[in-house]
Every structure is written in structure tokens, then in C-alpha cells.
Image 1: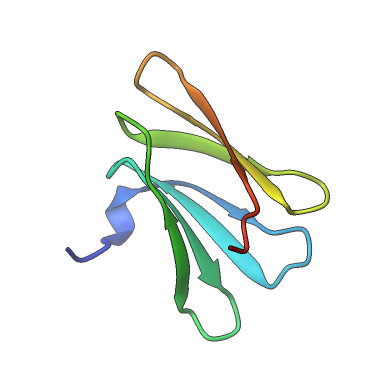
Image 2 (image 1 turned 135 degrees about the horizontal axis):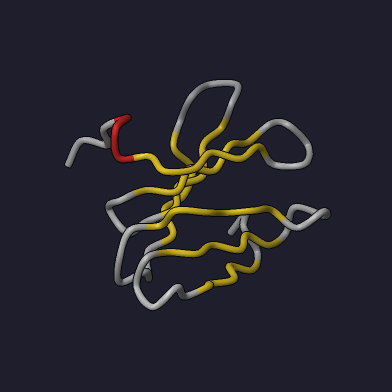
Length: 80
């Protein structure tokens, strides 16, 4: 499946500026490398579109919120 730009709902930079996270209507959050534009990781788990996300100050967590019952997910160990 192609990851179309129009699916992205929110975009946030990692605190170190080297990574970017995108929230999407396809029920995922994706982590991208800014330097080479490669997708590093996909975080599935939402039952509806993801509309908001934020990194923790130390960059080890991503908090996400979506449309399905306004759920919030915390993803630990962002870098595998």
C-alpha cells in the first residue's frame, strides 16, 4: 500500500531533530529518518485514524490519540 501524503493527520519532530513521526488516517504512526527520508518503523494498534501525537522530552516515548473512543496509546522504546 502506498503511503499517500493526504493520509497524514499530524507531524512531529523527534527532540533530536533527526526523526519525524507522522499520524495517519490509515490507523498507524510512522517514524521517518529526516536525513535520508526512509521509513524506520510503523506503529499499528489504533482502531481508527490517528489525529495527534507527541514525543516525550527524552524521545523514548510517543503518545498518540485517535478517533476510536478518543484512545491514547503510549509507544515505548521508539527505536526498537
